[in-house]
Length: 216
Image 1 (cartoon, rainbow, N blue to C red):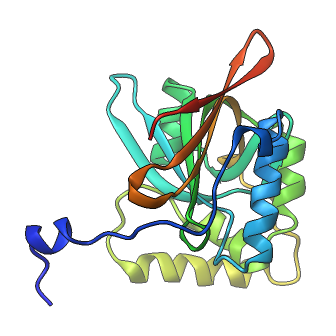
Image 2: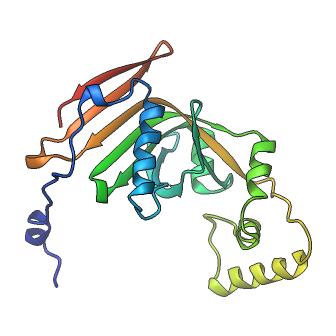
């Protein structure tokens, strides 16, 4: 199959699995997010905690990648990464981010915007200890976002650290840890027929969430 502009223009899906009414959406968007997340888990959506993280550098140039949600509460949405990675450097210079969850099986999307802060060292260390040993070693071995000569370089470094760490507790490296996105805006999107999608938006105004409907 050849991918052409005509093919892409005709590639579409009419959404019809559910509706979203203001009255059915909790007045607390974090509560509503957890309801939708539970639904995604119960529907056996593949990796429901996958989210797009969008950042920007100090000049406003955008960047985006997939990360995993590792915690959510009234304070915000948590993920963990290498502080020296591209996203870590961008967040240091410009501590604002956007998140997007898309659960195609449910025809749902959640968009989040907010400020970003590092989690404290103790929280990051506690999570690091729960990771599989191979993932711990990988976090130490990988100079994330830096140029490396080849795959072999990475695998040899991994095996070297694995050998040195055998039978030992692996300490969290100083350059690795967590962030929390503290939301100021959360939008719930439900796909509908004829592209007349439902969009329920929350804005944080003076400490209170204001709920409105947006045109699709």
